[in-house]
Image (cartoon, rainbow, N blue to C red; front, side, top):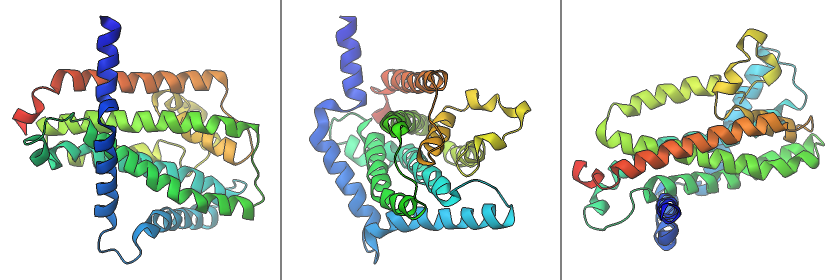
Length: 265
């Protein structure tokens, strides 16, 4: 009975029985995002490329950061962070923004933040050729550490979706969450090794590695794409623990609110 309940709850959170609807919502999100846009889907490449170029100029030539293959380093952080931020910010208002559908069709509310996560994931994949081209230009080639990349991407996806789902449900009750989350993400960006190296963090601040759920995703991606190493077992365990905890919180928040959300919209 318990296993059946947990399986059903897991299926609801990931919309296992609504795959066709999920596909349609993702397709709708992509069409709406690039509707009446001249460059269209090219913006998925241009935005992270421009952001990376700005960080590269500031940190490499103004602040004189000494990191080998720094443009590769920047892109391997900016592209996944763009996904992470887009999933959370898009998921935050996804339930409230689709209240007209929920009032007409009985469907899992989780489908809206989940569709935002998949939309952001597609945009991230479309932006990866920029990173690959730069890696070739810098003569950075795959190593054995690349086998960890799928695990890191899955962990980042689950964390981003979990936070997006939790935020979307809480946003129904607390509309002040939008500016709060904006500030949190801005601070979170600078507390994460997206544009700086893990080695640049002072020894007295090393504890933030354990307190930051996505720290080892980005430090791992930097090590792997830069050819300087990969995550150790202890680091992977911390990452998996954070991923499981965030997903558990999202699942519990969803479980206790799913039946009353439509009435509160």
